Length: 219
Image (cartoon, rainbow, N blue to C red; front, side, top):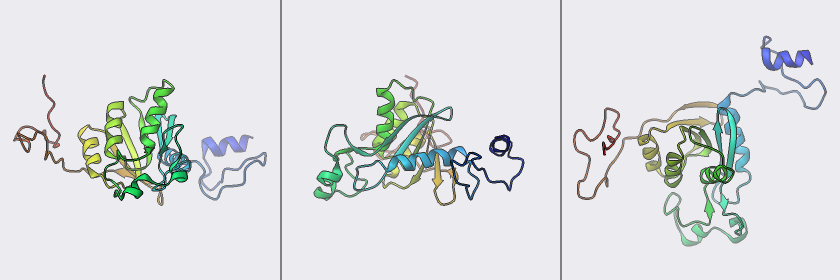
């Protein structure tokens, strides 16, 4: 057991592979201890396998202090028939991906992760979300209101306005690459206030700070 402990924690010998001395696990071909981003993103990918959505598999994980407190995958609301059994409502109505997301039998993975934490009385404020896809606009609003500090996601979703909302709310965004295992910051999206107020139009000079964020009201 001493060699096993040394390989797992000391890691003095870089060429050693972590193996199970009792023979329970086969030897691993690569470094078996992933960094935190890869660890949580792989958990999110596993969670996505539980989806009942016909469009895409999405899994989400909420973490606080490097501890998983909630997970969620996309699918029909609890107790309702699954889309894999009834067919896709959105496809039947001819609704394109990224449009009219309210017309759907299912709940998003990010939404379900937040809701499940709430049902169990778990605090998500100050936590971090890992998701296999970029959150939609609805989930972006939930992430902001839930008080999450950041989101790491992999796949794209055709609602760039969701990124605008998250960046405006100063939610830290990272993009993860499943092929390379690398994580990087999400490029800043210019904020477009086309409908800030219908009667006012675009923001006037001084309405935004040096980063392009709308200045908070002093009221």
